[in-house]
Length: 290
Image 1 (cartoon, rainbow, N blue to C red):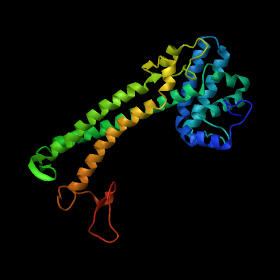
Image 2: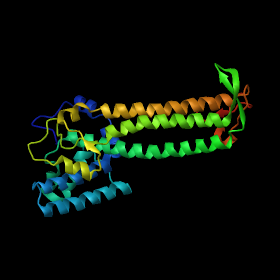
Image 3: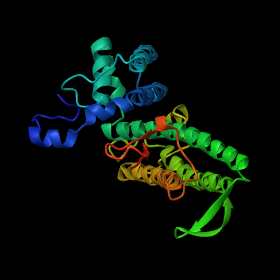
Image 4: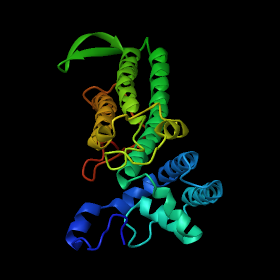
């Protein structure tokens, strides 16, 4: 029985199409689903929809599930539709009917939205750290090679004297602009949709400010209709920001391919970072392109 199922089952073909690879992808959302539930039940208790002892045992079991996820002992069981259903199933199996109370005032719609936003926020924070490390390296190389001459090209024709330092620094500055765009995406991600339910809010007096604070969101999606209307919009904005970083790296990689070409010969790569050719033993191919 699905959380949404009534008296009739959906056609198997329809269910297969709509579910897709949810089970596979939901494993990425598992820890964030638990965090969202912890915040939600704390709020439910504050408005007297949970007893204190119920909150205590739910918190403890959710933390146990979180530890199982972190240790790799958690999985979505066969026939369980999504991460929300799996967590609720485990709580109900271990604690009885009180496990079902975590769904009070929530819909799978706002659950998946908050899971995705928490996941994206975490991934963006990791990515920024990695881009910062590359930026620092490029700046370091820019300073180290500022006096190492390199021909400046226009349309693949030699134009003016330049330096490797200037080349490294160009890509460092490009990443700065990319991070400005990523910061805008982060601001969109960092808004709390929890409490919007299926797009029309809840009849319960939910304290959305409390869950916003507990989950570390900067703000909330105030309009509950927009919270659901924006489904997919956040991902699109993040994808656009990621494309900017990818474009910078792609252009730098193309420069590297060209500069190590025999017709230029400005740089070389260690053999272990390259591949060869089955018919041309002199050929040296970078692993990110041929």
